[in-house]
Length: 185
Image 1: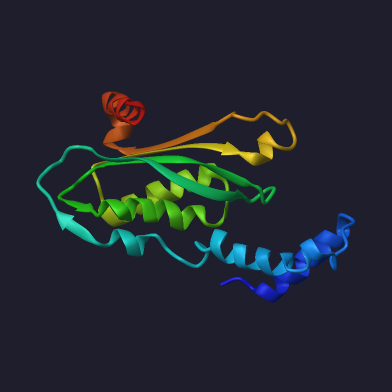
Image 2: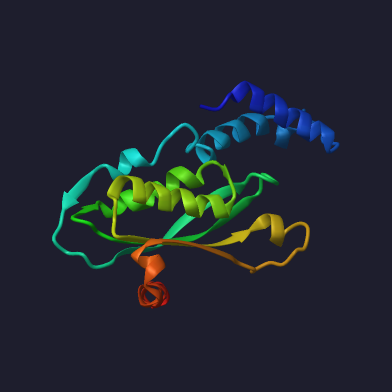
């Protein structure tokens, strides 16, 4: 739960710090708007994704389950600037699967925190491993970081790709190729 009063105070100080008049009509309600926005974009703090993944169903199929192109938005913990992109998750069931929406909820919980993409990728894989105990996992995130595109090096359109493999996906390069083919297809 965010502390709206502290956020509003901080926003007022920030606006004053950059030389703005906090009594200007367009800025009067900005501290409140930012505080409400923080409740939304940092809504993953204090929540665990595992609770979503616990809804499971028995299966006999041991083929790949892939959910791709899950849109996510997160905030870089180094600059408090957004990074956003697509998550692709695959696992090989070990007698059970979870609901497809639960995979997207897992991405949502971890992305709604101050974050770095590398950790986000690992947290998603860890949650799948803990709750589903699958035979293999592969997670890929593709994201654009506004801390690189609108400040600093200023390279719009550049993307960062991170992957994590576990189990069968680590051991079998053909499974990795299949994953990549399915994601790009």
